[in-house]
Length: 388
Image 1 (tube, one colour):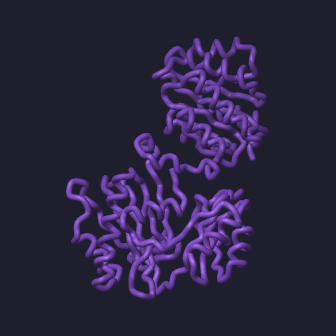
Image 2 (cartoon, helix red, strand yellow):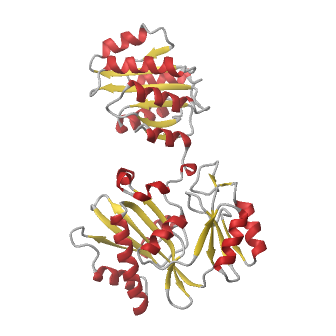
């Protein structure tokens, strides 16, 4: 689950991180009112979307008058913002953040992530803030400094000092960085985060530090115990992916025309690879899980069929936890209920596979059985209109 910048900054403030005053607005009039309440003579109007690269895409506007605030908010609200991290259709802008303009002397980068290899929360910092950290990592990796936190001991003072010296901060700034890092670590643990990023963490002209931007990702598996789960913005999520989550289906939209329904993430990846190798283009990644039921299969078909690009469906199920004859019953029930109009190719393997195939053959539905995955891929590519 992702948070908007204004939500991230709200959490930063709760955990003692320095942030500049700012207020979200969902209407043009509210944006002007917020700017008036903040005071000053310069503001930033920032589109609130779940995608990076907003500045380069025109989603962050520097303004110097209330008329410019109104114009900037009007230009952003209700539009689709396309960035290098969004899809080609962009992300809808339903909210803007009116931020106080900062006097910046230098921009730093700071983040914390879960490093799966070391099983540690890892802090990353760099003097090269305010730009794509991926580019910095690829071209000048020596500019990125890391510390890994031992979970039993927690973040230690010597680690915060190490990052402070690496970032070339003076003594007062190093002390402030220690407060920031320890606040971030508590936030990370308390809210079950998987990523927190501040880019930039600015050195202001008065020498102090301030978080001028914020990105937070929460671990979906822990949302049941987090009150901020209510902060989720479904408008920023793909509608099909959102519906899939409600039924515990793992779904990701892709650009092809062959839908794949598989049980098991590894098998789903292999299925997409073989479809691609056979000349087709997968329309999605869809893992229905090991405990497949007729209801979940039916919902999976509904989600698949809501994609107008889908020209054929490949169902690749291994009957281990659930028998193939029960899977076949679920497929038949789902196809009848949903009214699937595109060709369907089914490859079953596992317990009671012969019974399952027989049920599909006698169903009277336009379902083509395949002997193996290679055969299934070739058949579904042909059914979709041939290789692209």
